[in-house]
Image 1 (cartoon, helix red, strand yellow):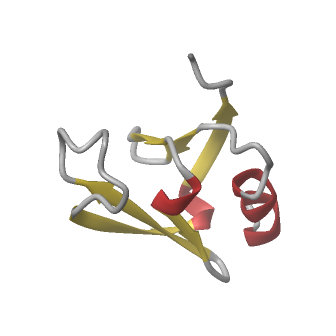
Image 2: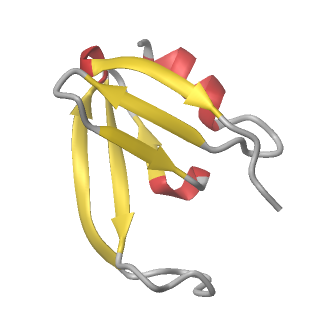
Image 3: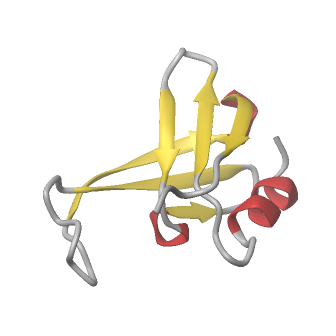
Length: 81
């Protein structure tokens, strides 16, 4: 996965949710473009605290720093209404 390819996926308008499959078997669900920051060769995933669905600026539980070489597959899914 390249930074340019991931940034293109994140930058789609309207945003399309992503599922990132990582080499350790973890799957990360990206439901908003504000929850992923793409850098050169890496990405930072923002994990908000649970139960904040109506918050404009949700509080952050933690961040995950990921080397893009560990992303083995990306799926896109249209949001459900």
